[in-house]
Image 1 (tube, rainbow over the protein chains, first blue to last red):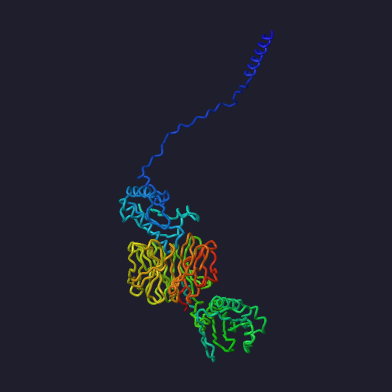
Image 2: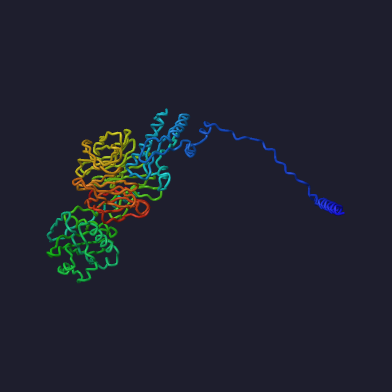
Amino acid sequence: MKKLLLVVVALSLVLMFNACAKKAPQVAPEGPVIEKVDEPVAQVEKPVLSEEELFQQKSLEELNKDQVLKKINFDFDMYAIREDMKPIMQANANWLLKFASVEVLVEGHCDEKGTIEYNIALGEKRAEAAKNYLVSLGLNAAKVKIISYGKSKPLVQGVDEASYFQNRRAEFVITKK
Amino acid sequence: MNMRRTVLFLSVFLLVGLLPGQEEITIRITEGMPMVPVAMPAFQLDQAAQKDDAAAVLYETLWKDLEFSRIFKMVPREHYSYIPALNPGAIRFKDWASIQANILISGQLELSADGRVIFSFKVYEVASERFIFGRNFGGKKDLARLIAHRAADEMLKHFGEKPMFTSKIVYVSEAGNDRDIYIMDYDGHRPTRITFSSAMDMLPSWSADNEKIIYTSYRNLSPELFMFNIYSGKTELLSSGGSNYAADWSPTADRVAFTSSKHGNTEIYIKDMKTGAEKRLTFNPAIDTSPCWSPNGREIAFTSQRGGTPQIYIMDAEGSNVRRITMEGTYHDSPAWSPDGMRLAFVSRIENRFDLYVYNLKSNEIAKLTENAGRNENPSWSPDGRHLVFSSNRSGRYQLYLVDYDGRNVRQITAGGENKMPKWQKSAK
C-alpha cells in the first residue's frame, strides 16, 4: 500500500515537471530575423620585411630610436669593455658589418661621481675603447667617430649605484646610412 | 645685439680724482696682522640723493666689500649712536677712538639732475687724527655698485693690498636646457650673458689682460675652444680636431695651456697666442688634463692618471721635471694655483663627496676648505689670494659660493637655475 502511494506521488511529480517544461515560452520574433554574417575577410598578411628592407625604410632617427645599436655600461672610473658587454659589442659590430655604409658616432658618458674636466677625458677614453673594440671586430675605423660629453648628459637622474651604472655608458648613434 | 651691450657695460669709465691739497700716506699691512677696525658712518647726502636709493646701494656695497676683505673689520653701526654724529668739517677723533675705530671713512654723495652720482670719501687714521687719503668718483647712478667696488679697491691699495672688488667672475649658467657663459661681479651681482648658442658652452677662463674669455663649446659637435673678445664682441675658433678644453692663460706671456685629444690621447698642449704655434707637453698613454699655470709662468700644475688614479702633478712649463704632489687619496682634480704661488687648491673625492683642499707647497701641509656639504668643485682664487670661488650642490642644484683661504665665511652668491665652473679674474683692473 505504501509502495503504491510512493509510485503515485512520484508519477504525479514527473507529470507536473513535464507540464512545466512544455509551458516554457517559445516567443516568435516579431520582425524578420537578421542573421549576422561576417564579411568574408581577405586574409592579407603584413609583408614580413627583411632586416635589409627595414633598414632601407627607416630614417636615421627611427633607427636610433629603435636602438638597433645597444649601449654598453662601464665600471666605476674605468674604460675597459666589461666581459658582459662584449656580446652586445659583438651584436653591434655584426649589425654594422652587415650595413657597411653606416657611419656611427660613439658617445662616451660618465656618472656624476667625477669632476667635470676629468670626466670629459674619461668619457673620451670610454668612447675610444668602444671604437677600438668595434675596429678589432673588423669595422672600418674611418666609419666610427667619437665624442665625450663627460657627465653633462646623464641618462637618469638617480643618486644610487644603479643610476650611476646606467650613466657610465657608451652610446652608438647612427649618423649616416 | 647683446654682445654690444656687454662691451658698453664693461668699458664704462669712472672719473677718479685725487682730492686736492692733501698729502697721501700709504699704510702697509702684512699677513697675519689683526684686522683693522673701520668706522663708516652714514654718508652726507644732498637733497636729490636723499630721495634716491643709489645712496643706500653704494653705502651697503662698500660696507660689505670692506667687511669681506679680511683686512678690515667694520665697527658695528649700533656703536655710532653712543657718540655724537659725524661732523665732516670738525671731526671729534676722540669719540671715534672711544668706539674702537682705528680708521674713519667720511663719505659724501650728491646726485645731479641728469642722474649722475658724485661720491667723495675721505679716510682718516683716528689715533693720529690724520687724513690718509681721499677720492672722488662720478658715474651714472645705476653704477652705484661699481663705484662702491672702486672705492673699496682704493682702500685695499692704500693698505698695501691688491685690488679685487672690481674683479669679475666668469661662469656657466644653466636655465632649462640652455648652458651659456656669463660674467658677474665678484659678489654675484650684475650678471651679463656673453654666449648665446643653443649648444653647450662650458669651462670658461680669462685671458691675462682680462679682455678675452676662452671656453669650450659643442656648437661644432665636438668640444672645441673658442675665444671671445669682450671689447670687440668677436668670437674665434682656437682649436682643431679632438676634444679641447680646460684652457688656462699664462699670467706672464701670451701662451695658453689646454687639454686636447687631437692626436688620439688626452694630453696637455701650449699654444703661443702670437704665432699660433702649438707645443705638446705630455707624452703618456694615461689621461693628462686640467693644466694651471703658476703665477710666475714657469710651472704648470695638472691632473694625471699615469699612476693609476687621477692625481695632481707639477711640471716645468717646457714639460720636463714632472713631480707628483698629491700622495694620498684616489681622486684629485682641478688644481688652482694661488696668486702668491705658495698654495695649490684642488678637489678631492672621498667616497661620493668632493671637498676642496689647499696644499701649501712650502710647508707641505694640507688644509680642508669644505666639509660634509655635497660636491664642491672647480675652485678659483681671488686676485688677492684671500678668497676662492667654487661650485657646490650642497643646497640641491649647483650654485656658486665664496670661501676664505682658511675655510671661513662661506657665502652663496648665485641662486636660480644652475651655476657652475667659475673662474675669477687673476687681477682687478
